[in-house]
Image (cartoon, rainbow, N blue to C red; front, side, top):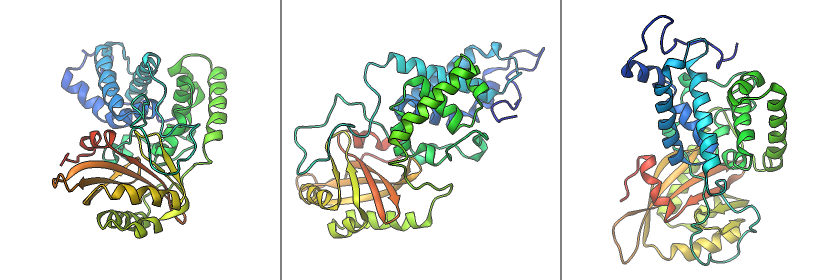
Length: 344
């Protein structure tokens, strides 16, 4: 019996009246975090995930009399959440969220133009919002560890999947549901679900694991030292120290700008020019997508106040930092509140 099949205490016992609002919230509160993470993986957006969790719980409350207690509260809520995400994706006017334009080559020199407002960018996810072990462990069918399945590289890769394939892969390969359970949620036969899974895995294999980060079930103590050195380099505006932390083939992305850079030399050349626009940086350690992350504040000669500037998500690897995703203005400062950071 898998976790999604395991019977939990139902919202109402057979023959008993429907529970009141407070009791209902107690039943659903235990699953709020994992539902939000599921919606984030489906949508690629922290803000949309917040809205969809609220929508899920509202729908569950309205449909509480339909839950007969034969399944689990968890499975019932995932059914509602997944269908809410699929409906939202169907209604979405823009393309899937991305970290960088897939056809755009690495840049050389300074960025030109302005932020790409027409692009829907993949947003980071606060570690403080990640579910704990008590929220439910993946079932035996899972192919990915929980920490890996929230990292930016993974979430970015699955955004390329059609919505139904994305849902099937998340339910089966991330949550560990069986094909029978997944078919029960998404509708259709187990044959159609297995076919969707096969296509999803083939597509994912073309984008991942080529960019697959080193993943561990627990944080690596060395990552703490790496993060500390990274923060010191920014605060001291020490470009040599920062570049030393990077692998030779490191990449540097900066949503919402479309330009991105590959290699120490290109990253160094870009930062040499950019850092000249500021008179100082301050940093705050955070966690995003189960990766080391930093909130950076800046000030300039014309404005001595420290103001939210950018949110940095670091991808550690053997030999140094493999990728930096730096959410810069105007997107970066708008994300600070979600990570519990003040704007100044």
